Structure formats: structure tokens, C-alpha cells
Image (cartoon, rainbow, N blue to C red; front, top):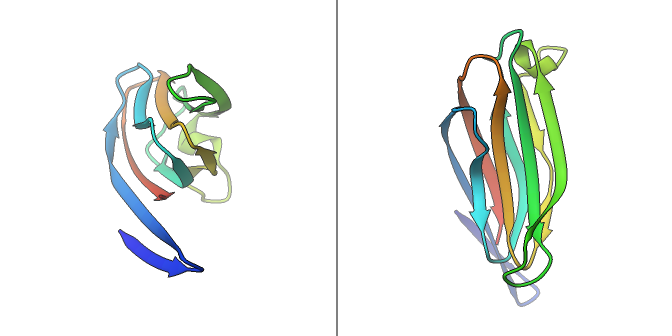
Length: 123
């Protein structure tokens, strides 16, 4: 975790990482009910093969205790997630909400695989 101070406010950068073993269900990589500004999520899709499909969903809450609202959905299909030019990292961009952010991963087709990931946030 890194911290910095600017103009009387404190910015705290936090990161987490791991390996997710896909199981065919929607699995949460981040699920929080407090203020989050998710800067970037990287997922290594190098081990995806033809017939594999993964889906990322990003949800936010619009009010305290409110329902999750889907704000972004991205699908990657095939070898290396269909990325070209030697890319092997799928990335999900910034999401912000004072009431919570949830980012999920689902392998919806193919052989369930392991995926390394890193999540960078500003708190």
C-alpha cells in the first residue's frame, strides 16, 4: 500500500493480487460496500484456448444499501482472450462509487482455467 498527501487530503493506493480458479460461476474479485475508486484490474488471459470465454462485470451501488447496478460488461473469447499483437492482459478501467463497487469474473465456456490478476485501487 502506498500513501501520499496533497492539498490537505490523503490519497492511499492499495493493490491486491492472486490467482482465480474459474468454476463456471460469477465470482467476485472485488465486493465492497464503501467508497472505492478502482483504477485498474489486470487479468492474464495467456492460458485461454479456442472455445474459452470469460466475462467481466462491473457493478456499483447508487445509494447506501441499494441494489447492484451493472455498469460495464466485457467478454473475451478464444486463445489469449482474442487479444492480438502478443497482448495477454485483459484490463478493466476505472469504476467509482461512494456506496460500493463489485467486479466479477465468469468463465462461461470452455475448460475452467486459472487466471492471475492484480487490482489497483485508490481509497
